Image 1 (cartoon, rainbow, N blue to C red):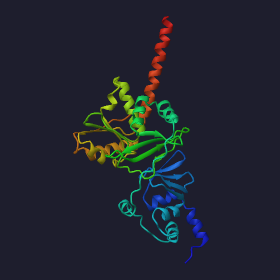
Image 2 (image 1 turned 45 degrees about the vertical axis):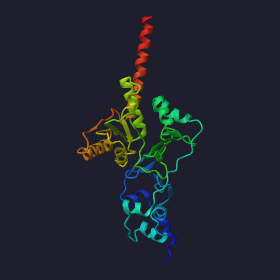
Image 3 (image 1 turned 90 degrees about the vertical axis):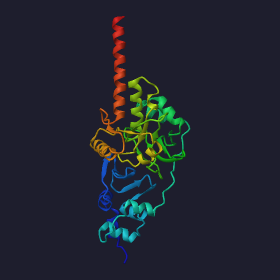
Image 4 (image 1 turned 180 degrees about the horizontal axis):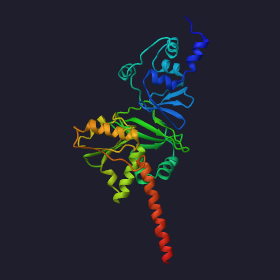
Length: 318
Protein backbone atom coordinates (compact mmCIF):
# COMPACT_ATOMS: atom_id res chain seq x y z
CA UNK A 1 0.00 0.00 0.00
CA UNK A 2 1.07 3.53 -0.79
CA UNK A 3 1.19 6.17 1.94
CA UNK A 4 -1.31 8.93 1.11
CA UNK A 5 -0.03 12.52 1.06
CA UNK A 6 -2.12 13.61 4.03
CA UNK A 7 -0.63 10.90 6.26
CA UNK A 8 2.90 11.63 5.04
CA UNK A 9 2.43 15.38 5.64
CA UNK A 10 1.11 14.66 9.12
CA UNK A 11 4.20 12.57 9.90
CA UNK A 12 6.58 15.21 8.52
CA UNK A 13 5.00 17.89 10.74
CA UNK A 14 5.20 15.78 13.92
CA UNK A 15 6.87 17.39 16.94
CA UNK A 16 10.41 15.95 16.98
CA UNK A 17 11.04 16.65 20.68
CA UNK A 18 7.83 14.83 21.62
CA UNK A 19 8.76 11.98 19.26
CA UNK A 20 12.22 11.53 20.82
CA UNK A 21 10.70 11.57 24.30
CA UNK A 22 8.18 8.86 23.40
CA UNK A 23 10.28 6.72 21.03
CA UNK A 24 13.72 6.89 22.69
CA UNK A 25 12.83 7.98 26.23
CA UNK A 26 15.07 11.05 25.84
CA UNK A 27 14.50 14.25 27.81
CA UNK A 28 15.37 17.77 26.65
CA UNK A 29 16.33 21.15 28.08
CA UNK A 30 15.50 24.33 26.16
CA UNK A 31 18.31 26.89 26.06
CA UNK A 32 19.82 29.35 23.62
CA UNK A 33 17.07 28.86 21.03
CA UNK A 34 17.35 25.07 20.81
CA UNK A 35 16.48 21.87 22.67
CA UNK A 36 19.45 19.83 23.98
CA UNK A 37 19.08 16.15 24.80
CA UNK A 38 20.10 15.44 28.40
CA UNK A 39 21.15 11.87 27.67
CA UNK A 40 23.09 12.80 24.50
CA UNK A 41 24.23 16.48 24.74
CA UNK A 42 25.39 16.48 21.11
CA UNK A 43 21.80 15.87 19.92
CA UNK A 44 20.05 19.21 19.32
CA UNK A 45 16.57 20.07 18.05
CA UNK A 46 15.80 23.52 16.65
CA UNK A 47 13.41 26.00 18.20
CA UNK A 48 10.81 24.96 15.60
CA UNK A 49 10.89 21.44 17.15
CA UNK A 50 11.40 19.97 13.65
CA UNK A 51 15.01 20.47 12.55
CA UNK A 52 17.55 18.31 14.39
CA UNK A 53 21.26 17.56 14.27
CA UNK A 54 23.29 14.87 16.08
CA UNK A 55 26.75 16.50 16.18
CA UNK A 56 28.75 13.49 17.40
CA UNK A 57 27.40 11.43 14.48
CA UNK A 58 27.50 14.18 11.87
CA UNK A 59 23.85 13.49 10.90
CA UNK A 60 20.93 15.90 10.74
CA UNK A 61 17.54 16.33 9.16
CA UNK A 62 14.04 17.79 9.29
CA UNK A 63 11.39 15.84 11.11
CA UNK A 64 11.09 12.47 12.85
CA UNK A 65 10.91 10.56 9.55
CA UNK A 66 14.41 11.76 8.64
CA UNK A 67 15.67 10.49 11.99
CA UNK A 68 14.19 7.02 11.52
CA UNK A 69 15.44 6.75 7.94
CA UNK A 70 18.94 8.20 8.46
CA UNK A 71 19.80 6.98 11.96
CA UNK A 72 17.70 3.84 12.50
CA UNK A 73 17.79 2.73 8.82
CA UNK A 74 14.02 2.18 8.77
CA UNK A 75 12.30 2.28 5.31
CA UNK A 76 10.31 5.44 4.58
CA UNK A 77 6.88 3.84 4.63
CA UNK A 78 7.53 2.08 7.92
CA UNK A 79 8.96 5.33 9.36
CA UNK A 80 5.72 7.16 8.52
CA UNK A 81 3.73 4.43 10.25
CA UNK A 82 5.92 4.64 13.35
CA UNK A 83 5.56 8.43 13.57
CA UNK A 84 1.79 8.36 13.06
CA UNK A 85 1.38 5.47 15.48
CA UNK A 86 -0.12 2.99 13.02
CA UNK A 87 2.69 0.57 13.80
CA UNK A 88 4.92 0.09 16.81
CA UNK A 89 8.68 -0.45 16.79
CA UNK A 90 10.85 -0.39 19.89
CA UNK A 91 13.84 1.90 19.66
CA UNK A 92 17.14 -0.02 19.61
CA UNK A 93 19.19 0.07 22.79
CA UNK A 94 22.55 1.84 22.95
CA UNK A 95 24.34 -1.53 22.95
CA UNK A 96 22.46 -2.61 19.83
CA UNK A 97 23.34 0.65 18.09
CA UNK A 98 27.02 0.16 18.88
CA UNK A 99 26.91 -3.32 17.30
CA UNK A 100 25.13 -2.01 14.21
CA UNK A 101 27.22 1.11 13.65
CA UNK A 102 31.02 1.03 13.43
CA UNK A 103 32.55 3.93 15.36
CA UNK A 104 33.34 6.87 13.07
CA UNK A 105 36.71 8.58 12.90
CA UNK A 106 37.00 11.97 14.57
CA UNK A 107 36.57 14.86 12.14
CA UNK A 108 38.49 17.87 13.49
CA UNK A 109 37.60 21.32 12.11
CA UNK A 110 40.32 23.06 10.09
CA UNK A 111 42.56 25.38 12.11
CA UNK A 112 42.54 29.15 11.70
CA UNK A 113 45.79 30.96 10.96
CA UNK A 114 45.93 33.29 13.98
CA UNK A 115 43.68 32.48 16.99
CA UNK A 116 42.56 36.05 17.72
CA UNK A 117 38.96 35.13 18.53
CA UNK A 118 40.16 32.31 20.79
CA UNK A 119 42.26 34.73 22.88
CA UNK A 120 39.49 37.32 22.97
CA UNK A 121 36.91 34.75 24.07
CA UNK A 122 38.99 32.80 26.59
CA UNK A 123 41.28 35.50 28.01
CA UNK A 124 39.17 38.67 27.72
CA UNK A 125 35.58 37.47 28.02
CA UNK A 126 36.13 34.40 30.18
CA UNK A 127 39.11 35.66 32.18
CA UNK A 128 41.33 32.61 31.59
CA UNK A 129 45.04 33.19 32.28
CA UNK A 130 46.94 33.63 29.00
CA UNK A 131 49.85 31.45 30.24
CA UNK A 132 47.43 28.54 30.73
CA UNK A 133 45.86 29.14 27.31
CA UNK A 134 49.28 29.29 25.64
CA UNK A 135 50.40 26.05 27.31
CA UNK A 136 47.30 24.19 26.10
CA UNK A 137 47.69 25.59 22.57
CA UNK A 138 51.30 24.39 22.49
CA UNK A 139 50.12 20.92 23.53
CA UNK A 140 47.58 21.06 20.64
CA UNK A 141 44.73 20.57 23.13
CA UNK A 142 43.20 23.88 22.17
CA UNK A 143 42.84 25.82 18.90
CA UNK A 144 40.62 28.13 16.87
CA UNK A 145 38.90 26.78 13.77
CA UNK A 146 38.21 28.58 10.48
CA UNK A 147 34.78 29.68 11.71
CA UNK A 148 36.18 31.35 14.81
CA UNK A 149 35.09 28.63 17.23
CA UNK A 150 37.27 27.35 20.06
CA UNK A 151 38.05 23.61 19.77
CA UNK A 152 38.96 21.52 22.84
CA UNK A 153 40.68 18.19 22.04
CA UNK A 154 40.98 14.93 24.01
CA UNK A 155 43.65 12.33 23.19
CA UNK A 156 44.11 8.59 23.68
CA UNK A 157 47.17 6.89 25.18
CA UNK A 158 49.03 7.13 21.84
CA UNK A 159 48.53 10.89 21.53
CA UNK A 160 45.86 10.47 18.84
CA UNK A 161 42.94 12.92 18.96
CA UNK A 162 39.76 10.98 19.76
CA UNK A 163 37.39 13.61 21.11
CA UNK A 164 36.75 17.27 20.37
CA UNK A 165 34.13 19.76 21.49
CA UNK A 166 33.45 23.12 19.88
CA UNK A 167 32.49 26.37 21.58
CA UNK A 168 31.27 29.35 19.55
CA UNK A 169 32.65 32.81 20.26
CA UNK A 170 29.96 35.02 18.69
CA UNK A 171 27.32 36.88 20.71
CA UNK A 172 26.05 36.24 24.20
CA UNK A 173 24.68 32.74 23.52
CA UNK A 174 27.44 30.65 21.96
CA UNK A 175 27.04 27.44 20.01
CA UNK A 176 28.45 24.34 21.70
CA UNK A 177 28.65 20.72 20.63
CA UNK A 178 30.89 17.72 19.95
CA UNK A 179 32.68 17.20 16.64
CA UNK A 180 31.50 14.37 14.40
CA UNK A 181 33.09 11.06 15.37
CA UNK A 182 33.96 12.15 18.92
CA UNK A 183 34.51 9.32 21.40
CA UNK A 184 33.48 10.50 24.86
CA UNK A 185 35.66 7.91 26.51
CA UNK A 186 38.60 10.24 25.82
CA UNK A 187 37.84 13.55 27.51
CA UNK A 188 39.66 16.87 27.43
CA UNK A 189 42.18 16.56 30.26
CA UNK A 190 45.34 17.99 31.78
CA UNK A 191 47.69 15.50 33.42
CA UNK A 192 49.85 16.51 36.38
CA UNK A 193 53.49 17.28 35.58
CA UNK A 194 54.50 14.67 38.18
CA UNK A 195 52.51 11.63 39.45
CA UNK A 196 49.62 12.91 41.56
CA UNK A 197 47.04 11.21 43.76
CA UNK A 198 44.35 13.80 43.08
CA UNK A 199 41.97 14.08 40.12
CA UNK A 200 39.66 17.07 39.69
CA UNK A 201 36.56 16.47 37.56
CA UNK A 202 34.52 19.15 35.74
CA UNK A 203 31.53 19.47 33.46
CA UNK A 204 33.41 21.42 30.78
CA UNK A 205 36.89 22.53 29.64
CA UNK A 206 36.02 26.15 30.53
CA UNK A 207 35.33 25.12 34.14
CA UNK A 208 38.56 23.10 34.18
CA UNK A 209 40.68 26.06 33.05
CA UNK A 210 38.80 28.49 35.33
CA UNK A 211 39.55 26.33 38.37
CA UNK A 212 43.22 26.29 37.35
CA UNK A 213 43.22 30.10 37.28
CA UNK A 214 41.51 30.38 40.67
CA UNK A 215 44.08 28.01 42.19
CA UNK A 216 46.93 29.98 40.65
CA UNK A 217 45.52 33.29 41.94
CA UNK A 218 44.73 31.97 45.42
CA UNK A 219 48.16 30.44 46.04
CA UNK A 220 50.32 32.92 44.14
CA UNK A 221 52.12 29.82 42.86
CA UNK A 222 52.45 30.02 39.07
CA UNK A 223 52.99 26.25 38.85
CA UNK A 224 50.21 25.12 41.20
CA UNK A 225 47.79 24.31 38.39
CA UNK A 226 50.29 21.88 36.83
CA UNK A 227 50.54 19.59 39.85
CA UNK A 228 47.10 17.95 39.79
CA UNK A 229 45.21 15.85 37.26
CA UNK A 230 42.11 17.44 35.73
CA UNK A 231 39.43 15.91 33.49
CA UNK A 232 36.39 17.37 31.75
CA UNK A 233 33.47 14.93 31.71
CA UNK A 234 31.72 16.81 28.86
CA UNK A 235 28.60 16.77 31.02
CA UNK A 236 27.72 14.95 34.21
CA UNK A 237 28.32 11.29 33.31
CA UNK A 238 31.49 9.30 34.03
CA UNK A 239 32.07 7.98 30.49
CA UNK A 240 35.54 9.58 30.30
CA UNK A 241 36.71 8.40 33.74
CA UNK A 242 37.65 4.72 33.15
CA UNK A 243 40.23 5.48 30.44
CA UNK A 244 41.82 8.35 32.38
CA UNK A 245 42.00 6.38 35.62
CA UNK A 246 43.50 3.40 33.82
CA UNK A 247 46.24 5.66 32.47
CA UNK A 248 46.83 7.36 35.85
CA UNK A 249 47.06 4.56 38.40
CA UNK A 250 48.42 6.88 41.13
CA UNK A 251 45.03 8.61 41.52
CA UNK A 252 43.48 7.92 44.92
CA UNK A 253 41.39 11.05 45.48
CA UNK A 254 38.46 12.20 43.32
CA UNK A 255 37.30 15.81 43.64
CA UNK A 256 34.03 16.48 41.79
CA UNK A 257 33.89 20.15 40.77
CA UNK A 258 30.53 20.08 38.99
CA UNK A 259 28.08 22.96 38.61
CA UNK A 260 26.30 24.40 41.62
CA UNK A 261 22.83 23.66 40.28
CA UNK A 262 20.38 20.76 40.88
CA UNK A 263 21.72 18.52 38.05
CA UNK A 264 25.34 19.17 39.01
CA UNK A 265 24.81 18.56 42.72
CA UNK A 266 22.80 15.39 42.03
CA UNK A 267 25.44 14.05 39.63
CA UNK A 268 28.25 14.75 42.09
CA UNK A 269 26.38 12.94 44.87
CA UNK A 270 25.72 9.91 42.64
CA UNK A 271 29.30 9.70 41.38
CA UNK A 272 30.76 10.09 44.87
CA UNK A 273 28.60 7.18 46.00
CA UNK A 274 29.54 5.09 42.95
CA UNK A 275 33.29 5.49 43.49
CA UNK A 276 33.38 5.72 47.30
CA UNK A 277 34.62 2.17 47.89
CA UNK A 278 37.20 2.32 45.09
CA UNK A 279 39.18 5.39 46.21
CA UNK A 280 40.66 6.75 49.39
CA UNK A 281 38.62 9.93 49.10
CA UNK A 282 35.67 11.17 47.01
CA UNK A 283 34.52 14.72 47.72
CA UNK A 284 32.50 17.45 46.06
CA UNK A 285 33.77 21.04 45.85
CA UNK A 286 31.02 23.40 44.70
CA UNK A 287 31.67 26.83 43.20
CA UNK A 288 30.18 29.85 44.97
CA UNK A 289 28.26 30.78 41.82
CA UNK A 290 26.79 28.46 39.22
CA UNK A 291 30.18 27.31 37.93
CA UNK A 292 33.88 28.01 38.36
CA UNK A 293 34.06 30.46 35.46
CA UNK A 294 31.44 32.56 37.23
CA UNK A 295 33.65 32.41 40.34
CA UNK A 296 36.72 33.36 38.31
CA UNK A 297 35.04 36.40 36.78
CA UNK A 298 33.81 37.49 40.22
CA UNK A 299 37.37 37.13 41.56
CA UNK A 300 38.79 39.21 38.70
CA UNK A 301 36.17 41.92 39.31
CA UNK A 302 37.06 41.96 43.02
CA UNK A 303 40.79 42.30 42.29
CA UNK A 304 40.11 45.22 39.94
CA UNK A 305 37.85 46.88 42.52
CA UNK A 306 40.54 46.50 45.20
CA UNK A 307 43.12 48.07 42.89
CA UNK A 308 40.82 51.04 42.20
CA UNK A 309 40.26 51.50 45.93
CA UNK A 310 44.00 51.46 46.69
CA UNK A 311 44.65 53.86 43.82
CA UNK A 312 42.02 56.34 45.07
CA UNK A 313 43.43 56.09 48.62
CA UNK A 314 46.91 56.97 47.34
CA UNK A 315 45.47 59.93 45.45
CA UNK A 316 43.78 61.22 48.63
CA UNK A 317 47.02 60.83 50.61
CA UNK A 318 49.00 62.78 48.01
